[in-house]
Amino acid sequence: MNRFYVFLAGVAAGAAVLAVAMMISAPSLMLGEVRSAHGLDDTVRLLTEAAEGEGWVVSSVQPLDRSVKKHGGPELRPVRLVNICQADHAGRILGEDEARMVSVLMPCTLAVYEKSDGSVWVGHMNPGLMGRLFGGVVSEVMAGPVAEAQARFIDAVR
Image (cartoon, rainbow, N blue to C red):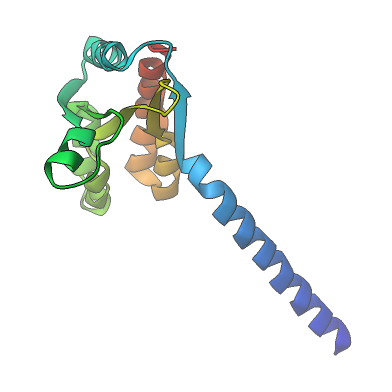
């Protein structure tokens, strides 16, 4: 009977360590950032050109910092949200009832922002990991062509 309790304690300790490790590493696995070799406006332009060059639509570039200020928030360093979509990829996901909840992540958004030292960065979601978490058509699309395209878009600003 003692061995059973030792076993249970070991399982509980292992689960606790795993939970803490996941909580620590999850943000850096789901989101990433890459330093741009360009200024803010050029980074936005290069990302836009790269996406449009591959048949993606840039539905908007939103100045998030200006919106925050306009609605009573503080003055912030520049932040631009580059919203992009590729109709075939979106159509595959949205065409299945079970996958439609992923529409909350659409369009794909890349964030271009300036840090306090003046450097410009591109923040992005990890579409490969996100896709694999959902499985099915979401995994096929997000972990495949979306992840590959996003990597090429970001490479355009390095």
